[in-house]
Amino acid sequence: MPEYRFLKTPSEGETITFNGSLEVPDQPIIPFIEGDGVGPDVSQAARIVFDEAVAHAYGRTRKIVWFDVPAGEAAFKKYNDYLPNDTFEAIRQHRIAIKGPLTTPVGGGFRSLNVTLRQVMDLYACVRPVRYFEGVPAPVKNPEKLDVVIFRENTEDVYAGIEWASGTAEANALIEFLKTKFNKTIRAESGIGIKPMSAFGSKRLVEAAIRYAIAHNKPSVTLVHKGNIMKFTEGAFMKWGYEVAKEKFAEETVTEQEVNELHGGKVPEGKVVIKDRIADSMLQQVLLRPDEYSVIATPNLNGDYLSDACAAQVGGLGIAPGGNINYMQGMALFEATHGTAPKYAGQDAANPGSLILSGAMLFEYLGWNEAAGLIYSAFGRTIQQKRVTYDFHRQMEDAELLKTSEFGKAVVENMG
Ligand code: NAP
Image (cartoon, rainbow, N blue to C red; front, top):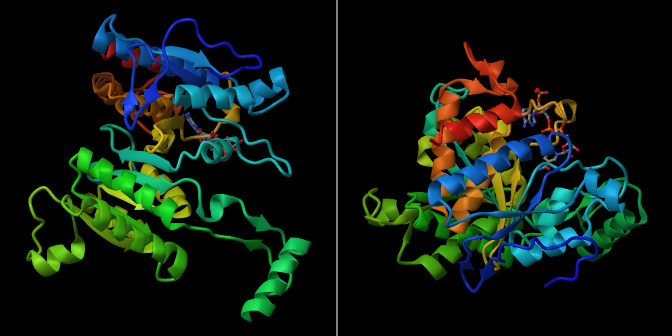
């Protein structure tokens, strides 16, 4: 048990453990960060949905014991610390947690709380499923054709935070070093950023994507990279991706090239096809041929762009869920993917969809698929009934405008 400075572990409930796979008690303790801005509103609405889903699915046999842990502005006010160590310890101890959005205070030297949580806890896979919910106003003709799960590498690439401003001693020293050591000329007064990508980091991410595809009977895993230009980072990501497929999943996978050259263009029964696409072309592909893609594995920056572009395509930017997962250690932090939307803070107006669907992902990760299924179907039904929050209401005809809390209750009603 960790020694907390000010937190107290809930008196009921048990800790989830990990022994190669998760061992989930019937009353697991799950740390919950409400978040800043609209965070408390969406968290309260979502929590009612989570509790009801578990009660509907399992009666009295299962229950989540929520453990409120502080982060962001609320934590700063109370403990003079945006991310208290107690919060890290609670998440580490209990393994699976969920959070609302957190403000990134503007000002020198402050790193994003979200990026810090992901990196410090080594949550290396950012998993973003993107699918269409019937009735959601979407900008394309056939939004239902896109149904992808994006695995974005979460710890490396230009997000590693290794960069120096133009004119600093460090930037100048690097420019000088590259000139004298490697005869590479960089313009004076350049800012310098480093893009590290390792075999270890890339392979564990692609492995997670392939395992997911196999477990969920998905037809393909697409490695999305910009390896035609950045050969030893993005290109290596692709190479390592194909390697891990061969090394660990030779029986279950086949490459697109093998399908064409050895199998006459027909995918052998039960095999997951491993293919790759250049990142810029992929942004066209998801628009023009969305049904050719199912699981996507990609480095950090590509994944950032691609997941927002895909979510927007199905009209779901405000309801897109996400999870940050370390599959090797059984640690995960699920989160609303939107920000704190400060102008709606405390107004009971924001859409709680992103956090609600992130909770459904959390239940799937626990293996509580019945609770997750109830959330997905009740959420879909509520949208189809055109009972929506302001963001969808302004784009839909004849819709009923609901507050955040009312939307949560409507989802619960639809579980019945
Ligand atoms: P934002 O909070 O996502 O808000 C931008 C706009 O998106 C809002 O004004 C609103 O649009 C819409 N929106 C976001 N969440 C919504 C919801 N739940 N329901 C309905 N509409 C929603 O982005 P931001 O203004 O750039 O960032 C604000 C703060 O959030 C910053 O401190 C940023 O660092 C932080 N942030 C945190 C996370 C995270 O915790 N994962 C992610 C991104 C940003 P309309 O005004 O058009 O209605």
